[in-house]
Image (cartoon, rainbow over all chains, first blue to last red; front, side, top):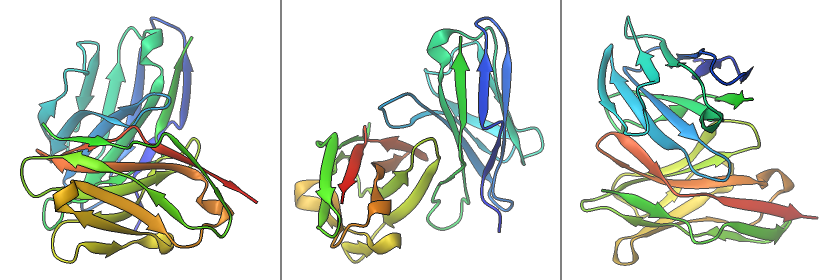
Length: 114
Length: 111
């Protein structure tokens, strides 16, 4: 049983560039979540999917952010026209609706915007 | 809306000593509570969770936590700390499917 994987682990980009991150959940999990964590803070919820449907988006998710989960498996998070304030760790988690719905996290993608 | 407070930003403990990390939550119904640990530059690893039943829950790495409804608390404990326990610890409560985290407590272990 492989865990949640994220790619890339680190991304350095210049302000104004677009970036895309990928998350592969645990294979049988039907819920997938994105969180953002800035230095010294706990993770904050961004959005989540059940299968391919995006069911909720946080107000933190500005118009420059878009997330997809086209086939209900992996998900991508794209940030357009990056700003220095987007520098953070982007964490993905997955869970199974049945039972306790416990969320398991990936290693995260560290984004640095110069 | 649910929220979590971790009153201690940083705790230093000697190796072999006991550790207790505090967590207070705010949630209208019966809470589902979690403790996660994060090593530098890494993702979150689940230590333990509480959903119902026995208020003392056991987790991995020798950790346990006690749910006290009257105090709205879910404190994490370990009887004897190892150097490898140095990390950041997050308490979280789930509401409307999403987790709300505290700001975390950084644990430093001194030899």
